[in-house]
Image (cartoon, rainbow, N blue to C red; front, side):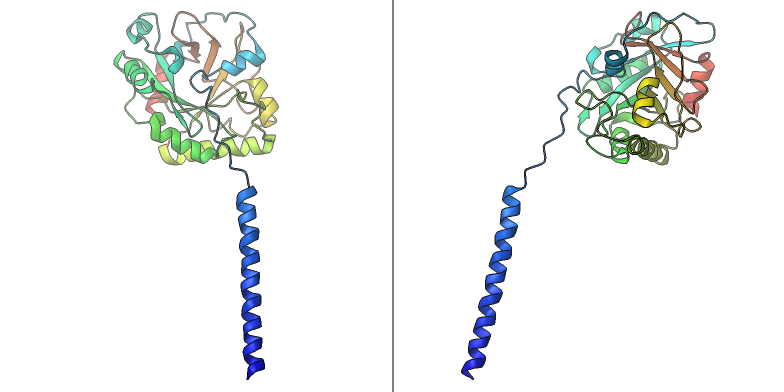
Length: 276
């Protein structure tokens, strides 16, 4: 009887000792594991479509004005502040894109005023999202974009949202992703946007970045309209998969607030894109 009790006490002591050791190991792991740094959005106020493209690819000249078969527009962000949309319309603007969001942690504080102001002035307008593949997944960012103004409605004056995917202003130009992983991230965003909004998102990029960071994939040419950035007299080479651009961002500044753009076609084509 005494041996049984003694054995029982010994087993209980061993169990308590093992449990104490496990807790000590767990505590050590908890104490020594560093906290994950919060995503950096310090440049979000000044990031807008093409800022990094101009830095990395430069400006090669002034675009030829071929207004007979192209429609003039522009894009803005919080960087422009309050926009005189009446003056923009008077200067010939027919459409505009407005930065809505960046990653999953920044909303343009000027967005509502800019987006609604463009509509009031009679412009066909849309929203764009500055992609941050380094902070969260493509689907998560598409949902964040939609929730903060990036959706679409069939009112004839709202363009489908655009994904601004360009050189990373915070570090590695491809956000630390391989071409295959970057392609998968973009597909995740565009697939989610289409499922939620029932429209394909435009993809804003440059041919140089697309070649470098996606391996020049042709995956999106048949599904997502191209908004190409190139500051030169002619549009030049397109990324793989597209045989034409829908929008050409041809200059960093000009007669309209923000960046200058041509839609590839007359105003009826812009209206058709808005109507779906």
